[in-house]
Image 1 (cartoon, rainbow, N blue to C red):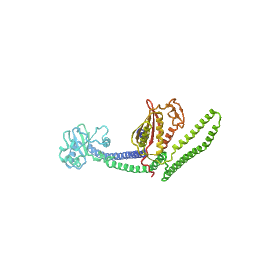
Image 2 (tube, rainbow, N blue to C red):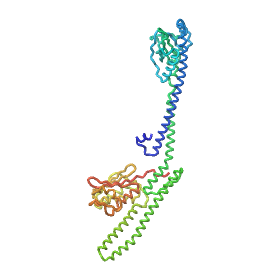
Image 3 (cartoon, rainbow, N blue to C red):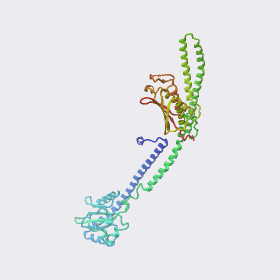
Image 4 (tube, one colour):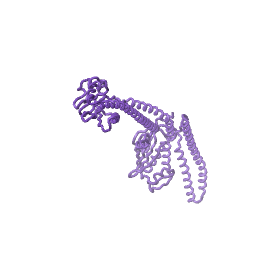
Length: 489
């Protein structure tokens, strides 16, 4: 079953997977039970047919035994009396030839009936006797010879025996030679039960019953699966909101497993928030503690007599001060404490386009209109600003394309600059790394791309870079669109 699932594209939703497995399980259970019931029904039916066939074969055998043992001079007298008086279940004649009859019955039980008659007659007549057993319909039944039909005879001869209602009942004809010149011909009506199924095991009523039971199980299953997986959906939506920087507490309720998972999620969220708060306080403390010694060192540097030594000390102090400010800027720009709200991305980029024109720079915005992105406005503005500043720093023309896709938003910012060497394209997101377009080597104090990527990841997205042909760089900002069903019920 699992190999069958793997050959097709499996459903992505847990609800769909469980419902599909339930449907397959119910169908298989119904098929297996139907197969067992059908086999049992068929076995019982064949047993009933075999029993009735043996009983009829024994009666036919008794009649055959009676006629075989009669002296030749009495046989025709007895036949004439039977035709005149009736009162027997069999139509018996002595014919001068074997009558050719067309087999008009096709039934699975036919073989059972023939086997029962062959076994009984061979036991009475011996295995060497050539016995012919044929099924015919009343309208096609031939008697006496190959040219006379039962309907051509007087009614008293055979109609009372073989033409009783229903008139379309099959007739069993047994023929075998009793001497070199005569064939004994025995015909009798076969009950329809012997040759026709009393009802298909998969009748319309049973199929309807199977469909109703399957539909009932599926409806209850769908309701049960949605009820059971609702906490998982609630937890998933909460995780997405936390990934976008929101603070969400999952209600601790439901079964013991649901309560344990919700409590663990809430505790994890609190530990993450404490970690972020501790990191912010740590950097603030470092900033406060380093400002005083850096200031003292600047004052002491001014007391140095040698100008080269003084300049070298000042450069080192400026680098140290820049590193401290850069680290604090990275933390403050990433951990922006603001509520999420609807952000008009298209209008924000249009403002940037107007500012670029005022500054004498060329920028073009195209694509879809997005005015309902849920995020932190200042953080998104800083993220886009850093990407645009980086594009304008290395290029003269910037193109921005907005694409709204299912589940996420894609903003491509392309420039006509020199691009980034493939070996360093993954390093430019590290703090204090900047690729020099002239030499192609890493260096400098770059923080713009690092801060932009941290903001994107704080919103549940990411930023990727790709060189353009023949030159230029494309920065792709991918942000998830908020699920409209964000309730935590």
